[in-house]
Every structure is written in C-alpha cells, then in structure tokens.
Length: 208
Ligand SMILES: [Mg+2]
Ligand SMILES: [Zn+2]
Image (cartoon, rainbow, N blue to C red; front, side):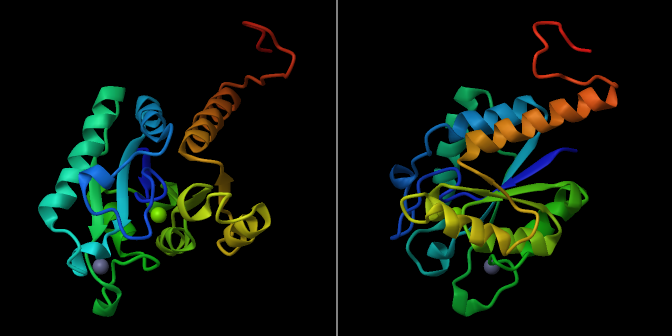
C-alpha cells in the first residue's frame, strides 16, 4: 500500500495564529486539493496527522472538527480525491500525551491501522515538529514551504537549516510540487525497472 501522511494546517489549508476554529476558517491552500487528488490518481492513499490542541483548549468541539473535515473531503471529492482518515491529537501541551507532534504517536497509530511499514511511508509537513515526529516513527520526511515555512515567514537559508535538522528531508515549494516530485520519481523508478532510460533529448516515443 502506497501511503502519504499529511499535516493539515499550513500544509493542506492556510494556518492561523489564532487556530482554525470553524469550517469557514478552514481554507485550502492554492493547488493543495488538486495535489492530493493527483496523488490519489497515482495510487497513493492519503491520511492526515494533525495536532488539534484547540480541542483541549476548548476553542472548538468535536462536531466542529468533523465539519472541517467534511469540508475537506467535499472539496476533494469534487476534484476526484479523498482523505482515507484523519488522525488528530486533541490534547493541550500540558496533558503530556504521546500523540502530540513532535512525538511520533499519530504516525505509529496510522502505521498500525493500515498495516504498513513506516519506512515506506512519505510524510509531509510545514514545521519542524512534523518532520521530527515523522522521522521518529521512521517515515520519509518532506517539508513544504507553506504555512510556518512560507517564504514570507522563513527565508531560504532558514528553511534549509530547518530541513537539515531532520536528515534526508526533501524540501518542496508546496503540496503541488511535492505531488509532482512523487509522480516523477515513481515514473523514473518504473522506467529503470523496465530497463528504459529517458534521455533529455528524446522526443515523443523517443525512449531508448
Ligand atoms: Mg502545520
Ligand atoms: Zn495527544
């Protein structure tokens, strides 16, 4: 099973310093919905792993959180995609749970639920704690330059420095660029498996 684990706020939808507290405040980032649908079309299952301490802080309730995810899946359905599941940490930091990122609890739960080897799983997020949690669980880590790592908040050098704190992390401008990376990498791997090498100057049908 091909699985991508996505952070939510700042990765799929615009983040807010005062928390995303309602479906109205849940607004997809440009191209993010289409990127998830593209991954789905390429055979990837997509699951969300998200810290939602706003629940523990009493800023919104479960019904509201569910309503946000209904909105997410409605927008995805219109694009031909879907999220298989949303795993969330509802705890406030003071509760000292095992599932709040940067701890790997959510990723481990996902691995168990889907019966996948986490070293085969791609994990995407916009912040250091996403990378740390995913790496601690053994996933392959990908940073997107949106949300907390948006160029307006974090310059290039700082973003590369952040990524370097979790060795092996690939950096992408956004979720669309990540999807493109994944699709192209798979295409190359399949071509190599067939013994076909694509050359830069090969025209239509010009595979050697
Ligand atoms: Mg985030
Ligand atoms: Zn938790």
